[in-house]
Amino acid sequence: MAVRASFAPRGAWIYVGTRGEPKIAAGFAIDPASGRLEHVASGPLSDSLAYIVTDRTGRYLLGASYPGNKITVNPISSPGRVQPVLQVLTDYPNAHSILADAGNHHVLVATLGNNLLNVFNFDAATGKLSPNAAASVSMKEKTGPRHFVFHPNGTFVYLLGELDGSVHVMDYDASSGQLKEKQTVSALPPGFQGAPSAADLHITPDGKFLYGSERTSSTLAGFKVNSADGTLSSIGWVATEKTPRGFNIDPSGRYLLVVGQHSHQMSSYRIDATTGQLIKLREYPTGKSPNWIEILDLP
Image 1 (cartoon, rainbow, N blue to C red):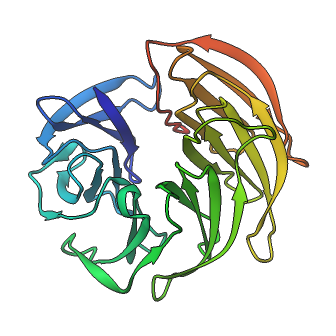
Image 2: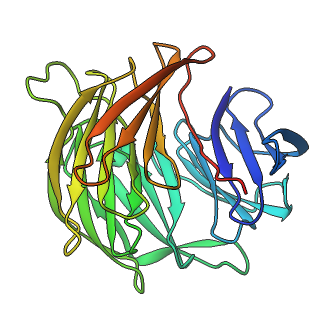
């Protein structure tokens, strides 16, 4: 089963990880004219990875293993060609997401199992990770850190708690990698009942609006971002595809696409540039159990 597609920042390349056997990262070249994929090569992964992404240079594939409680780094020798694992860090319970910051100096990892957002130094020359002096930020019990995003200006981080259904806002010092939590806002709709199961989180390219998906209620929550301090204010919720495990925002920031793992289809929304409200456009059939969306702006 493919779990995560990661675009390389240099050129039109995509990497797709599998969770079954064999555990591989398959590299594909994307034809810029047609969007068609051409398989280039497949490289071994050390475990089942819930999340893969390249570093900012496209030379390394970073992975977070939820069942294996690991963080991994694989070199990419040339576009599309993932090499055997370079580094494996163990004892990171239910690692769920991993991203390098804009400067490629630090890598953050959310570990759901111990309620931490971990910070590593990243050596872009060797691909090696090492613990940062401020090694982690501890979240409240039963937060369940799942996915996070950087604000486009690089000074704020937004973390989605799967188990508390909340977005946690943090100041981020890119020079030191230090994080400081300053706000928590609920992504659960009014009258919510049951156990929260928040899933995905994305911010518009201009940093004005943030959205999060919640699977129990099958809703998308929207927030306006304060440009001065990065704090959030709610702009409401919309009912969407059943079990919205994955969604994404197009590079222009005008449209949001969401898939329903149990509706087996995708919905498109227009993002109002002034209010951030989501205006539904169309529904599209997909294959069974869609759970991730990646969008590439081809020339």
